[in-house]
Amino acid sequence: MAAVGFALRSGLRGALALPHQQRAWNSGSGADQLGELGKGAGKGGGGGGTIREAGGAFGKRQAAAGERYFKEKEREQLAALKEHHEEEISHHKKEIERLQKEIERHKYKIKKLGDDD
Image 1: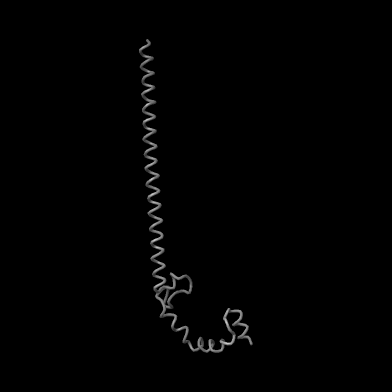
Image 2: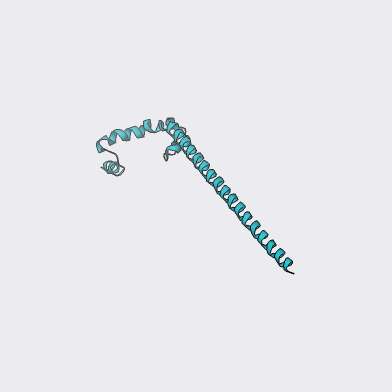
């Protein structure tokens, strides 16, 4: 009866299949094949966590998709950074032109003051 309670708590679909499943797990037939499935984290074919950790074809595919995603994000960030620096350069050039005009205006005032003497 404890086995039926365990089966219901662990989420198995049918308590009737439990004796067969217990024999299979106790005999090791199911657990031994887990190492064959993928070549992810560790010898056991993965840590049982994410797909990428599990290894195999899906793990490789997910790893490649992740790499593509981060490379694309990096390209976007570099493009945005380049655009930002170009805007900064443009702003500073305009500021230089404005300050040069101010310098010329002050030079003109100084010259005019000197001419008045």
